[in-house]
Length: 217
Length: 302
Image (spheres, rainbow over the protein chains, first blue to last red):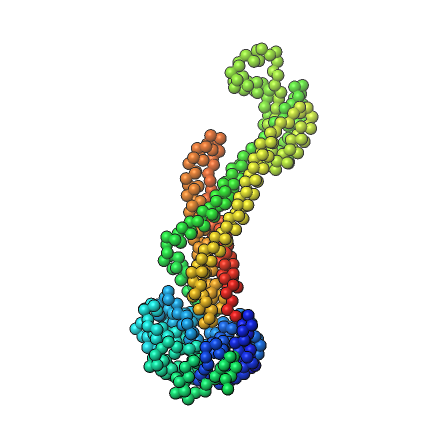
Protein backbone atom coordinates (compact mmCIF):
# COMPACT_ATOMS: atom_id res chain seq x y z
CA UNK A 1 0.00 0.00 0.00
CA UNK A 2 1.13 3.51 -0.85
CA UNK A 3 -0.25 6.59 0.88
CA UNK A 4 0.70 10.23 0.33
CA UNK A 5 -0.43 12.59 3.07
CA UNK A 6 -0.13 16.31 2.19
CA UNK A 7 3.21 15.74 0.50
CA UNK A 8 5.24 18.62 -0.85
CA UNK A 9 8.58 18.22 -2.60
CA UNK A 10 10.70 21.27 -3.17
CA UNK A 11 14.08 20.82 -4.89
CA UNK A 12 17.11 22.87 -3.92
CA UNK A 13 16.77 26.10 -5.86
CA UNK A 14 13.09 26.43 -5.01
CA UNK A 15 11.36 24.44 -7.76
CA UNK A 16 8.23 22.84 -6.28
CA UNK A 17 7.75 19.46 -7.99
CA UNK A 18 4.81 18.31 -5.85
CA UNK A 19 2.36 20.50 -3.93
CA UNK A 20 0.38 19.26 -0.96
CA UNK A 21 -0.53 15.95 -2.61
CA UNK A 22 -2.67 13.30 -0.85
CA UNK A 23 -3.80 9.96 -2.28
CA UNK A 24 -3.80 6.23 -1.56
CA UNK A 25 -2.98 3.24 -3.75
CA UNK A 26 -4.34 0.04 -2.21
CA UNK A 27 -2.16 -3.01 -2.23
CA UNK A 28 -2.69 -5.11 -5.34
CA UNK A 29 -4.03 -2.11 -7.25
CA UNK A 30 -2.79 -1.09 -10.69
CA UNK A 31 -2.72 2.69 -11.15
CA UNK A 32 -1.59 4.94 -13.98
CA UNK A 33 0.11 8.25 -13.48
CA UNK A 34 -0.50 10.76 -16.26
CA UNK A 35 0.70 14.25 -17.04
CA UNK A 36 3.09 16.20 -19.22
CA UNK A 37 6.77 16.00 -18.56
CA UNK A 38 7.60 18.21 -15.61
CA UNK A 39 4.22 17.58 -14.00
CA UNK A 40 5.84 15.69 -11.12
CA UNK A 41 5.36 12.05 -12.18
CA UNK A 42 9.02 11.07 -11.80
CA UNK A 43 9.31 12.91 -8.49
CA UNK A 44 6.29 11.05 -7.16
CA UNK A 45 7.83 7.70 -8.09
CA UNK A 46 11.16 8.70 -6.55
CA UNK A 47 9.41 9.54 -3.29
CA UNK A 48 7.74 6.11 -3.23
CA UNK A 49 11.07 4.32 -3.78
CA UNK A 50 12.86 6.47 -1.21
CA UNK A 51 15.29 7.88 -3.76
CA UNK A 52 14.08 11.39 -2.85
CA UNK A 53 12.66 12.58 0.45
CA UNK A 54 9.52 14.70 0.87
CA UNK A 55 10.10 18.29 1.97
CA UNK A 56 6.92 18.10 4.09
CA UNK A 57 4.10 15.63 4.61
CA UNK A 58 4.20 11.85 5.03
CA UNK A 59 4.91 9.12 2.49
CA UNK A 60 3.75 5.71 3.70
CA UNK A 61 4.92 2.60 1.84
CA UNK A 62 3.96 -0.83 3.20
CA UNK A 63 3.00 0.84 6.49
CA UNK A 64 6.40 2.48 6.88
CA UNK A 65 6.63 6.25 7.04
CA UNK A 66 9.53 7.04 4.74
CA UNK A 67 9.61 10.65 5.90
CA UNK A 68 10.49 9.53 9.41
CA UNK A 69 12.81 6.66 8.46
CA UNK A 70 16.54 7.03 9.03
CA UNK A 71 18.64 7.16 5.84
CA UNK A 72 20.32 3.89 6.80
CA UNK A 73 16.93 2.13 6.75
CA UNK A 74 15.91 3.30 3.26
CA UNK A 75 17.85 0.57 1.39
CA UNK A 76 15.67 -2.09 3.03
CA UNK A 77 12.53 -0.30 1.81
CA UNK A 78 13.95 -0.22 -1.72
CA UNK A 79 14.64 -3.95 -1.57
CA UNK A 80 10.88 -4.54 -1.46
CA UNK A 81 10.18 -2.31 -4.46
CA UNK A 82 10.93 -2.95 -8.11
CA UNK A 83 11.70 0.06 -10.26
CA UNK A 84 11.74 0.31 -14.04
CA UNK A 85 13.80 3.45 -14.53
CA UNK A 86 13.04 5.92 -17.28
CA UNK A 87 16.66 5.81 -18.44
CA UNK A 88 16.86 2.02 -17.76
CA UNK A 89 20.10 2.25 -15.74
CA UNK A 90 21.38 -0.97 -17.26
CA UNK A 91 25.03 -1.79 -16.57
CA UNK A 92 26.76 -2.24 -19.92
CA UNK A 93 29.91 -3.82 -18.50
CA UNK A 94 28.18 -7.15 -17.74
CA UNK A 95 25.90 -9.69 -19.34
CA UNK A 96 22.12 -9.67 -19.35
CA UNK A 97 22.21 -12.43 -16.74
CA UNK A 98 24.49 -10.50 -14.38
CA UNK A 99 22.36 -7.37 -14.72
CA UNK A 100 19.32 -9.25 -13.49
CA UNK A 101 21.40 -10.92 -10.78
CA UNK A 102 22.31 -7.60 -9.15
CA UNK A 103 19.18 -7.13 -6.96
CA UNK A 104 19.49 -10.70 -5.67
CA UNK A 105 23.16 -10.14 -4.81
CA UNK A 106 22.17 -7.03 -2.92
CA UNK A 107 19.49 -8.82 -0.92
CA UNK A 108 21.89 -11.73 -0.37
CA UNK A 109 20.18 -14.66 -2.08
CA UNK A 110 21.71 -18.08 -2.11
CA UNK A 111 23.59 -18.46 -5.40
CA UNK A 112 21.73 -21.42 -6.82
CA UNK A 113 18.30 -20.14 -5.86
CA UNK A 114 19.26 -16.77 -7.36
CA UNK A 115 20.29 -18.30 -10.68
CA UNK A 116 16.96 -20.07 -10.94
CA UNK A 117 15.09 -16.84 -10.28
CA UNK A 118 17.12 -14.90 -12.85
CA UNK A 119 16.28 -17.47 -15.52
CA UNK A 120 12.62 -17.37 -14.57
CA UNK A 121 12.54 -13.56 -14.76
CA UNK A 122 14.29 -13.49 -18.14
CA UNK A 123 11.91 -16.15 -19.40
CA UNK A 124 8.92 -14.12 -18.22
CA UNK A 125 9.97 -10.99 -20.17
CA UNK A 126 10.91 -12.99 -23.26
CA UNK A 127 14.68 -12.76 -23.01
CA UNK A 128 15.34 -16.45 -22.38
CA UNK A 129 18.36 -17.49 -24.42
CA UNK A 130 19.95 -14.05 -24.26
CA UNK A 131 21.48 -14.56 -20.83
CA UNK A 132 25.08 -14.31 -21.97
CA UNK A 133 24.53 -11.41 -24.37
CA UNK A 134 25.98 -8.01 -23.51
CA UNK A 135 23.17 -5.41 -23.18
CA UNK A 136 24.66 -3.17 -25.87
CA UNK A 137 23.61 -5.76 -28.44
CA UNK A 138 19.96 -5.67 -27.35
CA UNK A 139 17.36 -3.58 -29.18
CA UNK A 140 15.65 -0.68 -27.37
CA UNK A 141 12.63 -2.81 -26.58
CA UNK A 142 14.79 -5.66 -25.32
CA UNK A 143 16.69 -3.30 -23.06
CA UNK A 144 13.34 -2.19 -21.67
CA UNK A 145 12.47 -5.83 -20.97
CA UNK A 146 15.82 -6.40 -19.34
CA UNK A 147 15.09 -3.48 -17.04
CA UNK A 148 11.70 -5.01 -16.19
CA UNK A 149 13.27 -8.40 -15.47
CA UNK A 150 15.69 -6.74 -13.06
CA UNK A 151 12.80 -4.91 -11.38
CA UNK A 152 10.76 -8.08 -10.72
CA UNK A 153 13.43 -10.75 -10.16
CA UNK A 154 13.28 -10.38 -6.37
CA UNK A 155 9.44 -10.51 -6.42
CA UNK A 156 8.75 -7.07 -4.95
CA UNK A 157 5.34 -6.22 -3.54
CA UNK A 158 5.37 -2.88 -5.36
CA UNK A 159 6.41 -2.28 -8.97
CA UNK A 160 7.07 1.25 -10.21
CA UNK A 161 7.61 2.08 -13.87
CA UNK A 162 8.62 5.51 -15.09
CA UNK A 163 7.53 6.05 -18.70
CA UNK A 164 8.11 2.43 -19.70
CA UNK A 165 6.45 2.86 -23.09
CA UNK A 166 8.32 5.99 -24.14
CA UNK A 167 10.25 5.59 -27.38
CA UNK A 168 8.49 2.31 -28.20
CA UNK A 169 6.09 1.82 -31.06
CA UNK A 170 2.50 1.14 -30.10
CA UNK A 171 2.56 -2.64 -30.60
CA UNK A 172 5.67 -3.00 -28.47
CA UNK A 173 4.25 -0.63 -25.85
CA UNK A 174 1.11 -2.75 -25.61
CA UNK A 175 3.27 -5.84 -25.09
CA UNK A 176 4.99 -4.11 -22.20
CA UNK A 177 1.65 -3.07 -20.70
CA UNK A 178 0.41 -6.66 -20.87
CA UNK A 179 3.52 -7.66 -18.99
CA UNK A 180 2.75 -5.20 -16.19
CA UNK A 181 -0.85 -6.40 -16.13
CA UNK A 182 0.35 -9.97 -15.57
CA UNK A 183 2.36 -8.86 -12.54
CA UNK A 184 -0.70 -7.02 -11.24
CA UNK A 185 -2.72 -10.20 -11.65
CA UNK A 186 -0.45 -12.08 -9.25
CA UNK A 187 -1.01 -9.46 -6.55
CA UNK A 188 1.75 -6.90 -7.13
CA UNK A 189 0.88 -3.23 -6.62
CA UNK A 190 1.73 -1.53 -9.91
CA UNK A 191 2.22 2.19 -10.50
CA UNK A 192 2.99 3.23 -14.09
CA UNK A 193 3.64 6.72 -15.37
CA UNK A 194 3.21 7.80 -18.97
CA UNK A 195 2.50 10.98 -20.88
CA UNK A 196 0.55 9.15 -23.58
CA UNK A 197 -2.93 8.66 -22.09
CA UNK A 198 -4.41 6.75 -25.02
CA UNK A 199 -2.52 3.68 -23.92
CA UNK A 200 -3.91 3.75 -20.40
CA UNK A 201 -7.50 4.38 -21.28
CA UNK A 202 -7.73 0.96 -22.92
CA UNK A 203 -7.12 -0.66 -19.58
CA UNK A 204 -9.87 0.94 -17.54
CA UNK A 205 -7.72 1.40 -14.46
CA UNK A 206 -7.58 4.37 -12.13
CA UNK A 207 -5.57 7.25 -13.57
CA UNK A 208 -3.95 9.90 -11.38
CA UNK A 209 -3.49 13.02 -13.50
CA UNK A 210 -0.86 15.52 -12.44
CA UNK A 211 -0.30 19.11 -13.55
CA UNK A 212 2.43 21.26 -12.03
CA UNK A 213 2.68 19.06 -8.97
CA UNK A 214 -1.06 18.94 -8.21
CA UNK A 215 -4.03 16.86 -9.30
CA UNK A 216 -5.25 18.02 -12.68
CA UNK A 217 -8.95 18.86 -12.65
CA UNK B 1 24.42 -16.33 10.68
CA UNK B 2 25.55 -19.17 8.45
CA UNK B 3 24.11 -17.36 5.46
CA UNK B 4 25.89 -14.17 6.52
CA UNK B 5 29.23 -16.01 6.63
CA UNK B 6 28.45 -17.57 3.25
CA UNK B 7 27.94 -14.10 1.75
CA UNK B 8 31.24 -12.90 3.19
CA UNK B 9 33.10 -15.96 1.93
CA UNK B 10 31.50 -15.25 -1.45
CA UNK B 11 32.80 -11.64 -1.38
CA UNK B 12 36.27 -12.70 -0.26
CA UNK B 13 36.42 -15.23 -3.07
CA UNK B 14 35.28 -12.87 -5.80
CA UNK B 15 37.69 -10.16 -4.57
CA UNK B 16 40.59 -12.62 -4.83
CA UNK B 17 39.47 -13.75 -8.28
CA UNK B 18 39.34 -10.13 -9.37
CA UNK B 19 42.96 -9.67 -8.32
CA UNK B 20 44.03 -12.87 -10.06
CA UNK B 21 42.23 -11.85 -13.25
CA UNK B 22 44.59 -8.90 -13.68
CA UNK B 23 47.83 -10.44 -12.47
CA UNK B 24 50.25 -7.94 -13.97
CA UNK B 25 48.71 -4.69 -12.78
CA UNK B 26 47.98 -6.10 -9.37
CA UNK B 27 51.46 -7.59 -9.01
CA UNK B 28 52.95 -4.13 -9.57
CA UNK B 29 50.63 -2.78 -6.90
CA UNK B 30 51.54 -5.55 -4.49
CA UNK B 31 55.26 -5.04 -5.12
CA UNK B 32 54.93 -1.35 -4.38
CA UNK B 33 53.27 -2.16 -1.06
CA UNK B 34 55.73 -4.95 -0.28
CA UNK B 35 58.74 -2.69 -0.84
CA UNK B 36 57.19 -0.01 1.33
CA UNK B 37 56.79 -2.65 4.03
CA UNK B 38 60.22 -4.20 3.47
CA UNK B 39 62.13 -1.04 4.42
CA UNK B 40 61.06 -0.81 8.07
CA UNK B 41 60.99 -4.59 8.39
CA UNK B 42 64.61 -4.87 7.19
CA UNK B 43 65.72 -2.12 9.53
CA UNK B 44 63.87 -3.83 12.37
CA UNK B 45 65.59 -7.13 11.57
CA UNK B 46 68.98 -5.39 11.38
CA UNK B 47 68.54 -3.68 14.72
CA UNK B 48 67.23 -6.73 16.51
CA UNK B 49 70.09 -8.85 15.09
CA UNK B 50 72.56 -6.21 16.31
CA UNK B 51 70.91 -6.31 19.72
CA UNK B 52 71.35 -10.06 19.81
CA UNK B 53 75.09 -9.82 19.09
CA UNK B 54 75.72 -6.99 21.50
CA UNK B 55 73.82 -8.81 24.22
CA UNK B 56 76.60 -11.35 23.93
CA UNK B 57 79.28 -8.62 23.83
CA UNK B 58 77.85 -6.83 26.84
CA UNK B 59 78.53 -9.80 29.09
CA UNK B 60 82.27 -9.51 28.49
CA UNK B 61 83.29 -5.97 29.53
CA UNK B 62 85.94 -6.14 32.19
CA UNK B 63 87.23 -3.87 34.93
CA UNK B 64 90.93 -3.99 35.60
CA UNK B 65 92.09 -3.16 39.14
CA UNK B 66 95.70 -1.97 39.25
CA UNK B 67 97.20 -2.29 42.74
CA UNK B 68 99.64 0.19 44.30
CA UNK B 69 103.25 -0.81 43.63
CA UNK B 70 103.82 -1.02 47.36
CA UNK B 71 100.97 -3.44 47.96
CA UNK B 72 101.73 -6.45 50.13
CA UNK B 73 100.40 -10.03 49.78
CA UNK B 74 98.03 -9.28 52.69
CA UNK B 75 96.50 -6.37 50.73
CA UNK B 76 96.06 -8.62 47.73
CA UNK B 77 94.31 -11.20 49.89
CA UNK B 78 91.96 -8.52 51.29
CA UNK B 79 90.99 -7.30 47.80
CA UNK B 80 90.59 -10.85 46.60
CA UNK B 81 88.24 -11.75 49.43
CA UNK B 82 86.05 -8.69 48.85
CA UNK B 83 85.88 -9.57 45.14
CA UNK B 84 84.96 -13.12 46.01
CA UNK B 85 81.99 -12.00 48.09
CA UNK B 86 80.84 -9.11 45.90
CA UNK B 87 77.35 -9.81 44.52
CA UNK B 88 77.95 -7.96 41.25
CA UNK B 89 81.22 -9.65 40.41
CA UNK B 90 80.78 -12.69 38.23
CA UNK B 91 84.43 -13.74 38.05
CA UNK B 92 87.90 -12.39 38.52
CA UNK B 93 91.43 -13.34 37.62
CA UNK B 94 94.67 -12.32 39.30
CA UNK B 95 97.53 -11.16 37.07
CA UNK B 96 100.91 -11.24 38.79
CA UNK B 97 103.21 -8.32 37.89
CA UNK B 98 106.00 -10.68 36.75
CA UNK B 99 103.65 -12.46 34.38
CA UNK B 100 102.50 -9.11 33.04
CA UNK B 101 106.08 -8.03 32.39
CA UNK B 102 106.83 -11.25 30.59
CA UNK B 103 103.78 -10.77 28.39
CA UNK B 104 104.80 -7.20 27.61
CA UNK B 105 108.28 -8.37 26.60
CA UNK B 106 106.85 -11.01 24.35
CA UNK B 107 104.36 -8.73 22.72
CA UNK B 108 106.69 -5.81 22.14
CA UNK B 109 109.69 -7.94 21.25
CA UNK B 110 111.85 -5.97 23.65
CA UNK B 111 113.43 -8.75 25.65
CA UNK B 112 115.74 -6.42 27.46
CA UNK B 113 113.17 -4.29 29.24
CA UNK B 114 113.62 -5.96 32.58
CA UNK B 115 117.38 -5.81 32.28
CA UNK B 116 117.35 -2.08 31.54
CA UNK B 117 115.03 -1.38 34.37
CA UNK B 118 116.22 -2.17 37.81
CA UNK B 119 112.91 -3.49 39.01
CA UNK B 120 109.51 -4.47 37.52
CA UNK B 121 107.59 -1.20 37.01
CA UNK B 122 104.27 -2.97 36.48
CA UNK B 123 101.71 -3.40 39.24
CA UNK B 124 99.76 -6.49 40.23
CA UNK B 125 96.29 -6.50 38.76
CA UNK B 126 92.88 -8.12 39.15
CA UNK B 127 90.81 -8.55 36.02
CA UNK B 128 87.19 -8.48 37.11
CA UNK B 129 84.25 -9.68 35.04
CA UNK B 130 81.07 -8.12 36.35
CA UNK B 131 77.61 -9.64 36.24
CA UNK B 132 75.65 -8.49 33.13
CA UNK B 133 74.73 -4.92 34.09
CA UNK B 134 73.44 -1.70 32.58
CA UNK B 135 76.19 0.79 31.65
CA UNK B 136 75.20 3.05 34.57
CA UNK B 137 75.48 0.20 37.06
CA UNK B 138 78.87 -0.71 35.62
CA UNK B 139 80.01 2.83 36.36
CA UNK B 140 78.85 2.48 39.95
CA UNK B 141 80.67 -0.83 40.32
CA UNK B 142 83.84 0.68 38.91
CA UNK B 143 83.68 3.54 41.45
CA UNK B 144 83.09 1.13 44.28
CA UNK B 145 86.00 -1.13 43.30
CA UNK B 146 88.39 1.79 42.94
CA UNK B 147 87.66 2.55 46.62
CA UNK B 148 89.08 -0.79 47.83
CA UNK B 149 92.26 -0.46 49.93
CA UNK B 150 95.57 -0.27 48.05
CA UNK B 151 93.80 -0.15 44.65
CA UNK B 152 95.45 2.57 42.64
CA UNK B 153 93.18 2.54 39.61
CA UNK B 154 90.04 0.72 38.47
CA UNK B 155 90.07 1.02 34.72
CA UNK B 156 87.01 0.34 32.67
CA UNK B 157 86.36 1.69 29.25
CA UNK B 158 82.62 2.14 29.52
CA UNK B 159 82.46 4.79 26.83
CA UNK B 160 82.36 2.40 23.88
CA UNK B 161 79.69 0.26 25.48
CA UNK B 162 77.58 3.30 26.18
CA UNK B 163 78.05 4.64 22.65
CA UNK B 164 77.06 1.32 21.16
CA UNK B 165 74.05 1.15 23.42
CA UNK B 166 72.99 4.66 22.39
CA UNK B 167 73.45 3.85 18.72
CA UNK B 168 71.31 0.75 18.93
CA UNK B 169 68.62 2.69 20.77
CA UNK B 170 68.70 5.34 18.07
CA UNK B 171 68.51 2.76 15.30
CA UNK B 172 65.59 0.98 16.90
CA UNK B 173 63.77 4.28 17.37
CA UNK B 174 64.43 5.03 13.72
CA UNK B 175 62.99 1.66 12.79
CA UNK B 176 59.80 2.41 14.71
CA UNK B 177 59.57 5.88 13.22
CA UNK B 178 59.96 4.41 9.73
CA UNK B 179 57.33 1.82 10.58
CA UNK B 180 54.87 4.57 11.49
CA UNK B 181 55.65 6.52 8.32
CA UNK B 182 55.23 3.45 6.14
CA UNK B 183 52.06 2.44 7.96
CA UNK B 184 50.71 5.80 6.91
CA UNK B 185 51.96 5.18 3.37
CA UNK B 186 50.17 1.82 3.40
CA UNK B 187 46.89 3.52 4.28
CA UNK B 188 47.39 6.20 1.62
CA UNK B 189 48.39 3.79 -1.16
CA UNK B 190 45.34 1.65 -0.48
CA UNK B 191 43.14 4.70 -0.21
CA UNK B 192 44.34 5.70 -3.65
CA UNK B 193 44.00 2.32 -5.38
CA UNK B 194 40.56 1.75 -3.91
CA UNK B 195 39.48 5.27 -4.85
CA UNK B 196 40.44 4.51 -8.48
CA UNK B 197 38.44 1.28 -8.34
CA UNK B 198 35.45 3.09 -6.93
CA UNK B 199 35.62 5.70 -9.67
CA UNK B 200 35.80 2.91 -12.26
CA UNK B 201 32.69 1.30 -10.78
CA UNK B 202 30.81 4.52 -10.03
CA UNK B 203 27.88 3.60 -12.24
CA UNK B 204 27.47 0.17 -10.72
CA UNK B 205 27.53 1.72 -7.25
CA UNK B 206 24.92 4.33 -8.18
CA UNK B 207 22.55 1.72 -9.69
CA UNK B 208 23.08 -0.63 -6.74
CA UNK B 209 22.14 2.11 -4.33
CA UNK B 210 18.99 2.88 -6.32
CA UNK B 211 17.83 -0.73 -6.08
CA UNK B 212 18.44 -1.10 -2.37
CA UNK B 213 22.13 -1.69 -1.69
CA UNK B 214 23.20 -0.73 1.83
CA UNK B 215 26.43 1.15 2.43
CA UNK B 216 28.06 -1.95 3.84
CA UNK B 217 27.14 -3.91 0.71
CA UNK B 218 28.83 -1.22 -1.41
CA UNK B 219 31.92 -1.20 0.80
CA UNK B 220 32.32 -4.95 1.14
CA UNK B 221 34.10 -5.85 -2.14
CA UNK B 222 36.52 -2.96 -1.71
CA UNK B 223 37.34 -3.92 1.87
CA UNK B 224 38.01 -7.49 0.80
CA UNK B 225 40.13 -6.33 -2.10
CA UNK B 226 42.20 -4.21 0.29
CA UNK B 227 42.44 -7.07 2.78
CA UNK B 228 43.84 -9.37 0.10
CA UNK B 229 46.12 -6.65 -1.16
CA UNK B 230 47.47 -6.03 2.35
CA UNK B 231 48.02 -9.65 3.30
CA UNK B 232 49.49 -10.66 -0.07
CA UNK B 233 51.90 -7.73 0.06
CA UNK B 234 52.90 -8.74 3.60
CA UNK B 235 53.71 -12.24 2.34
CA UNK B 236 55.71 -10.74 -0.54
CA UNK B 237 57.55 -8.55 1.94
CA UNK B 238 58.35 -11.60 4.06
CA UNK B 239 59.89 -13.24 1.01
CA UNK B 240 61.73 -10.05 0.12
CA UNK B 241 63.25 -9.60 3.58
CA UNK B 242 64.25 -13.26 3.80
CA UNK B 243 65.92 -12.94 0.40
CA UNK B 244 67.76 -9.80 1.56
CA UNK B 245 69.03 -11.59 4.67
CA UNK B 246 70.03 -14.58 2.57
CA UNK B 247 72.00 -12.33 0.22
CA UNK B 248 73.65 -10.29 2.97
CA UNK B 249 74.56 -13.09 5.35
CA UNK B 250 77.72 -14.54 3.68
CA UNK B 251 79.38 -11.11 3.46
CA UNK B 252 78.27 -10.26 6.97
CA UNK B 253 79.63 -13.53 8.38
CA UNK B 254 82.99 -12.86 6.76
CA UNK B 255 83.11 -9.34 8.16
CA UNK B 256 82.06 -10.47 11.63
CA UNK B 257 84.57 -13.30 11.71
CA UNK B 258 87.33 -10.64 11.61
CA UNK B 259 86.07 -9.61 15.05
CA UNK B 260 85.59 -13.17 16.17
CA UNK B 261 81.81 -12.82 16.28
CA UNK B 262 79.34 -15.23 14.80
CA UNK B 263 76.94 -12.73 13.23
CA UNK B 264 73.86 -13.53 11.16
CA UNK B 265 70.92 -11.42 10.08
CA UNK B 266 67.94 -13.19 11.56
CA UNK B 267 64.73 -13.70 9.60
CA UNK B 268 61.18 -13.10 10.78
CA UNK B 269 59.72 -15.43 13.40
CA UNK B 270 56.28 -16.97 12.72
CA UNK B 271 54.64 -14.68 15.28
CA UNK B 272 56.25 -11.63 13.70
CA UNK B 273 55.06 -12.71 10.25
CA UNK B 274 51.55 -13.06 11.64
CA UNK B 275 51.72 -9.62 13.26
CA UNK B 276 52.96 -8.06 10.03
CA UNK B 277 50.23 -9.84 8.04
CA UNK B 278 47.47 -8.64 10.34
CA UNK B 279 48.94 -5.15 10.54
CA UNK B 280 49.22 -4.78 6.77
CA UNK B 281 45.72 -6.18 6.31
CA UNK B 282 44.11 -3.84 8.82
CA UNK B 283 45.97 -0.77 7.55
CA UNK B 284 44.92 -1.57 3.97
CA UNK B 285 41.31 -2.02 5.04
CA UNK B 286 41.46 1.28 6.87
CA UNK B 287 42.60 3.00 3.67
CA UNK B 288 39.81 1.32 1.69
CA UNK B 289 37.21 2.15 4.31
CA UNK B 290 38.19 5.83 4.28
CA UNK B 291 38.03 5.95 0.48
CA UNK B 292 34.64 4.18 0.36
CA UNK B 293 33.13 6.31 3.12
CA UNK B 294 34.29 9.44 1.37
CA UNK B 295 32.62 8.35 -1.86
CA UNK B 296 29.40 7.30 -0.12
CA UNK B 297 29.17 10.60 1.75
CA UNK B 298 29.70 12.57 -1.44
CA UNK B 299 27.09 10.61 -3.40
CA UNK B 300 24.22 10.37 -0.95
CA UNK B 301 21.10 9.98 -3.13
CA UNK B 302 18.56 11.32 -0.66
